[in-house]
Image 1 (spheres, rainbow, N blue to C red):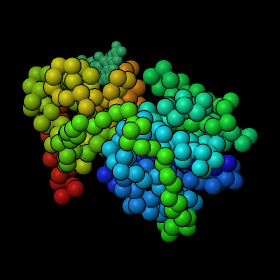
Image 2: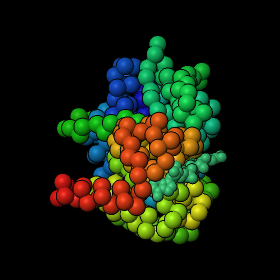
Image 3: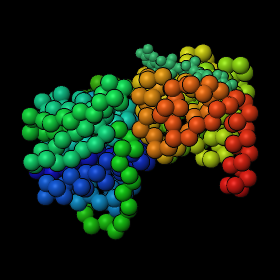
Length: 326
Ligand SMILES: Cc1cc2nc3c(=O)[nH]c(=O)nc-3n(C[C@H](O)[C@H](O)[C@H](O)COP(=O)(O)OP(=O)(O)OC[C@H]3O[C@@H](n4cnc5c(N)ncnc54)[C@H](O)[C@@H]3O)c2cc1C
């Protein structure tokens, strides 16, 4: 019996959300009196494996192969299945990133296990995993229990705090992933990276979002949103209406059909607060809404509301933040 956590990495750099899951994994492993095992898969896994030890894994399974250099679902799922068997895992967890969601679903399917996707909380009850999921646009929390021996869950980013890194106590064990190039069904023909330097929405602790309220002058409106975001070190988000109107690319969309975010601070500029938008950001710790309509539904959800024109309020806030934060 063990709790196994998949540590996602790209080019040797681990995805920070994996450490949040590993931190929660420690708590679950303690409750089960079982070891906490991390699995790192790739062609260059040494740095992530050492980090996993520092973040509290008892054992790190290093599943390295040149065939696993690029992420490809069938290869990574097969390697993770090897890790499940090697660890004797009864609980398998991963961050619910795009890759985490599909790899956990594939492993659960291949091993006949139950799956709780995009869980927002996890606990042990009577020796079994209970995964809490939010459904119906975050209006209902539901507990999922498992009838299978292996219990698999992916965890929504920022559901748990980052654990403290400490002195490593465990050990790294090299495991043959049992995956050959010929057995992998996909081929990577090119890798195109988007602009770097941007703060990723799902990792962000602060987000400033713009909505259709910028329609009067979208370029200026989103420039103002961007300036406020960079003054406070925030990522830029958007409502679907702003994305659909072509004011900003889809990758910035927050909501039911966009990204789910959980920052410490969410500033909504010219966003009405439709239920589908709230579904993606309703879990934010502090919500600030700027809207010229005092009756806008976003004010019911906001901790702080500013009734006013965003073209005046946003630059005034940016200037004030710059003054105070230097
Ligand atoms: C199946 C489905 C999925 C969806 N998924 C998503 C999703 O993922 N994300 C999402 O956001 N939406 C989603 N939607 C759309 C959603 O229902 C709303 O249409 C959308 O969120 C509205 O975006 P908005 O708040 O920017 O625009 P609006 O609702 O038009 O609101 C604009 C707001 O700006 C204010 N405003 C106007 N001018 C100014 C100004 N100068 N200064 C300050 N305030 C101003 C207005 O008072 C208004 O409140 C989905 C809808 C469906 C049916």
